Image 1 (spheres, rainbow, N blue to C red):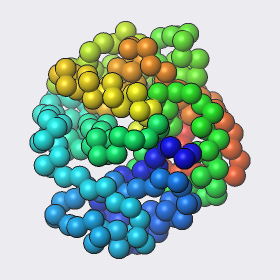
Image 2: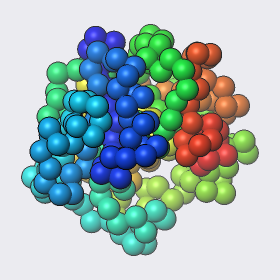
Image 3: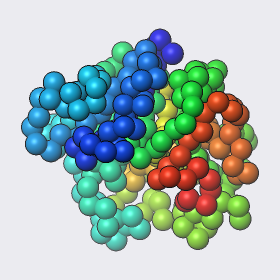
Length: 260
């Protein structure tokens, strides 16, 4: 993983308590390239933020970054997920692109939400996934139709009842502007990995005026353009690579399709 970046996305709420312990647990895995992507509300210095995470490398971003790169898109209140009026989270891939713009040197980029916990050897698990040649790898990705060129993405079915089985009907939604839905997909974003090529393409389509709710926009846009898209979990909650020395949790529960 010498040219792979591992990033935890967070803000000041994890300065103390379990959130702080969790991020330090990531740092202590001794990844070759670990960073904390920190949503900076209060104009803090990197050194000040780093001190709260045992000296971890920090990448700050703020509302100003979103303004500079035109990431601060409006969010329609008629969108199914539009009650979340913060573009840094509705358009989650934009905060990831801010990290990429500041750190464009890696071949692959893992991003973890700060409420993703692990037990065991996370570094070993991510190293095992280095053999998966994919431009977008998500903890859970699903497709509308049986697109044969994406064998490791399950077609949405009765075992994957996201939003009552209507997930893909909500995205694209009001305010979204997709370049294509030729390969219509959705995903769950607490754990994702992008190739450098995928990041560059997402920047291009953004500059061309396309954007949307990240969990649908990203896999659909990349798959429709011919990029490789892969799900870590299949429809039976089985991992693509069954690495027994690490368990992953989101909000205290193991990842399953029941979360969607």
